[in-house]
Amino acid sequence: MLNVKMMCYNRNMIKKSKILFVCALLSCLALPVSALSETQEDVIVKKCNTIQETLKMVQKKDARVRVYLGSLYEKILTKYIVPLNVRLVENNVTNVALIENQNAFVEARILFMDDFVSYQRYLEELTAMSCKTNPQEFYDKLELVRIKREKMTEDVGKMSGLIAKQKALVVNLKENL
Amino acid sequence: MNPGEEKKESKGSRNILIMGLGSIVIALLTTGISLAIYHNSGNIYLDRSRPGFLPDKEEIEEDAKKQDSDYALDKSGVITVEILDEYLEHYSAEELIVDSYNDAFDIDVLSDTNLGIGAEEPADIDE
Image: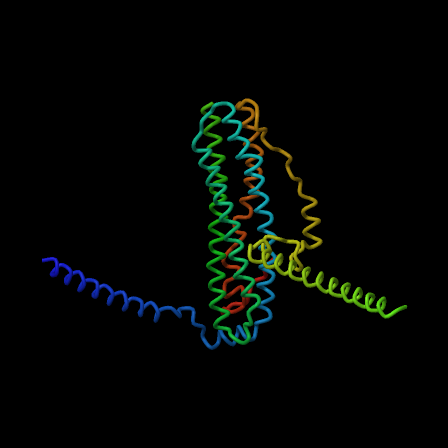
């Protein structure tokens, strides 16, 4: 009885691994979606210097924005969010939502910094790459940088959401005083 | 000068040379390690004082014009409606500034069109 069960189990496993193998094969075939056309490759080679210049400008602008946003987040946390929670504790007012928001804000801020470092690492690698000799590889890297940049947009949106939530919570606190 | 003194002097100058070279090697080694840590930790990407990333003259002037609010909520004291009103007033001003950066990492900046890889001409990227 046990042997029959084991056989059935093994057959199922073989079947599953076959399906997985086919799926993996199909996904491998489907990978080069960002394959460049010959014209695009020519354009990249031809405009390589301009593209690199643009990327360096973007990199510089991003560094500036990061400094501004980083200091603004720091200011909001140290001058508004934390002091209010400390003061509430001193006044024996329990507001779990505000404390939760503070924790979420701290976490999101760390994530913002980490994601920025990761994004800049990729962007720097991209600017150091030669688009003249290997446009396809350059384009693949560019796609990765775009994904990282998208993550940055998400992080900034999340931070703004938490800042708006803090305001709503304080308004609510004021109404219930 | 007798031969013994001469030998002593040449040994001394050799030691000074070894010490000098040793100091240079140690300095290069420690600088290399520091730079590796600086790069690998990612701090290099958060640092705007590195070459090529220093603020432009216009940016410095622009920053100087900005009036930074000195407001900070006191950690001690009672909580009143007036205090929260003042808090919200200053907080809303900061929120507005943050919101103005919502498109800071716009994905279109790296689009094919903007980089000149697409069919259309690239748009200008304002610095």
